[in-house]
Length: 168
Ligand code: SF4
Ligand code: SF4
Picture 1 (cartoon, rainbow, N blue to C red):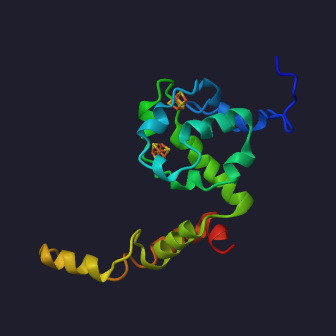
Picture 2 (tube, rainbow, N blue to C red):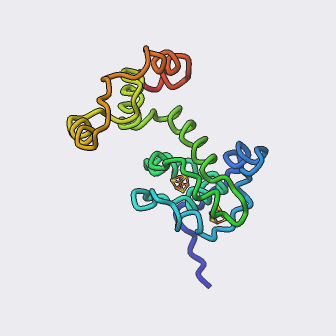
């Protein structure tokens, strides 16, 4: 038997899991680490902390692990994990909530900020580049204007909490 005590013992903190447990479909303790969520995740190749590992971190209350990297921000909210989970856990929803928590603590990744800025300014989620314009022309599609709507996207963003993260 190895009597050596590790330098740092893992301290389990249940308070993180408690934030999800009462929402139907979000009980982190139902996860038994089968890995099906991570195996089907289209963003897994970009993540250093995979969806099933994120679930384990939540079970153990290891928020630092989640804060230490930007893996959760690669999640595209496609819900594949939810569809694949044998326990019916809405991993996608849990990750979405975690994004909000992390954004409050350390701010949003700059790519997110830029995307929200673009939505606010143009009403578009992706830029209308010259390549896009050219392709549309080749396909005989009508040309698009630089902006969508009359600034409604900006008004909506200004009414949400997101604006405080963009301006941080
Ligand atoms: S919702 Fe997010 S974590 Fe789940 S499969 Fe899609 S990209 Fe992966
Ligand atoms: S698929 Fe469900 S049970 Fe399996 S590791 Fe992911 S969250 Fe846990």
